[in-house]
Image (tube, rainbow, N blue to C red; front, side):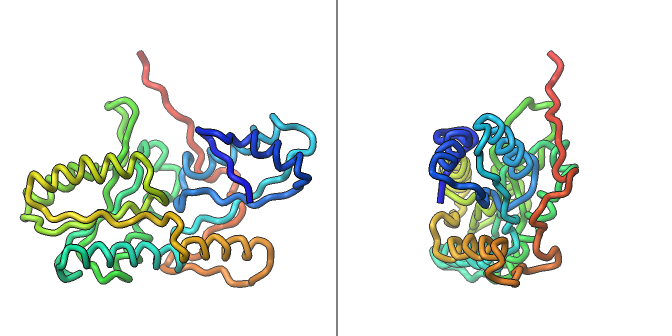
Length: 261
């Protein structure tokens, strides 16, 4: 098992160089994103190709595992987290509002991938498993120029709008698009969203991310076993089925548009 990053040490090239020096020839890559889009999948593939070229002769061949957005163990992990949050609020699951959050992406990126479709499907599966019928998908952490349209609504805007439309008393925020408690989760949800809820008298609980939950780790192992031929099972819930192992040539194409000064 090796670890490599796009934006922090150890970078991909460092990791591949170490793997080459350790005599490794082939590897399977698990991307820490459960959903398909340019920045969550294709860009990582491009980065790995560039890293192999940088390392040069002897760089190991790296193939990606499929996306796990609808894997039973991912859904179960998130459903358990939502259920625990509902319990902490001491309300019935049928009475609590649930907002599933994911990183917003530019509309020009979203139009060329299945990111939103996968998120809606995963959120529905988790809500069904947790018995929380009052749910919606929202977004967070947008960046870039304000004139560039990104997926909406923002989680903070959504809380205010929902509370204005009908008084929200209990809210669970479930960061389904993130697998760990990094800065965007902690600041956007535990600070900004929590502050809005406090101001409006909304009892809020933030569901845990997958982290090192044993069920989530078992899912990773199962995805590896699929690709190594140790099992013929390709587990997936819902209507979208098990996602592809090998990405089509035109999958998640995106060319970032820079604003004209």
